[in-house]
Length: 53
Image (cartoon, helix red, strand yellow):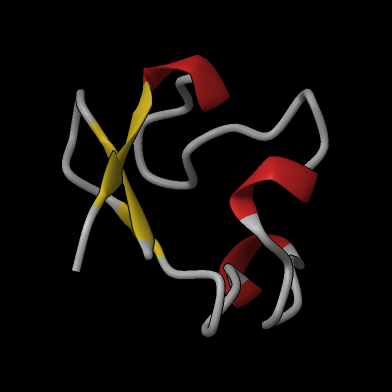
């Protein structure tokens, strides 16, 4: 399951993590820190929606 930033379209894939900001693969979206921000546009977790695959 991926999570998409509704502002810029960045996809967070838990199997890939977000190495560009130090998030290791295998971290579920729900377990990301509360201050997680989109690495492309800087919005918070609340701006992401779940994409069913």
